[in-house]
Image (cartoon, rainbow, N blue to C red; front, side, top):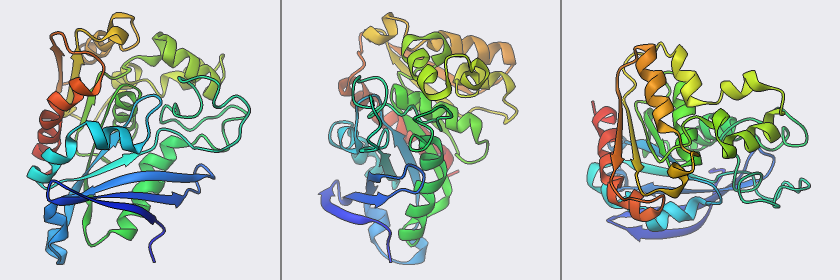
Length: 291
């Protein structure tokens, strides 16, 4: 019996978008997740298992934002990929202060397992996204999803999540991509606020273990298979929240190959930007998922 409750089933680009909910042992809370099954996954038979692209959302988002505005399903339908849209944090953990700001706490889990009180019991989003959720999905939808072929992508805080989970778990994902990622959180206000809360202000070594720019310095996994897009009209880029140049510099100095960073003229931080390049990111994942 599936551990998921299906809240809605929506026809979309020939496939089905499932709005699911389940009780998480990682976060100790109910968690919502959206799953898009392309037409290829609905044909029946064990030979129709499709690869999976996990999409990690940015600050304040739920599984619905990108499902509704990112246009990923159109491209996933075309390429025969399933899409997984996790939430961005636990909801309803009832920790004092968790809903006081938009860039920390609820909607802002940063895809890390917190080590500091009072967050460490519930804010365990790295374990949830990298271990618990995939295992639950592959158990419940094992006839449709191929657990051996998984890639990861994300936007902003979720771009940080995609890059760091990819770098922290070599071999788990076939490729990685990111839209406007928080590339060097130890050196930007968003990251410093989040890491101070989740890890403690003095625990700077732990901060580095969740920073793509720091992690890539020790990367031994060969070709990065990484695509990053950043809009030059993005105010958060201009304010120094994203710092993709720091990631590029670290990759170059480490002698690592396989990172493509594209600066897209005039594009901002929004879903207008993401929907424009969603096809490129789905195609990037498909290149490795179908290799």
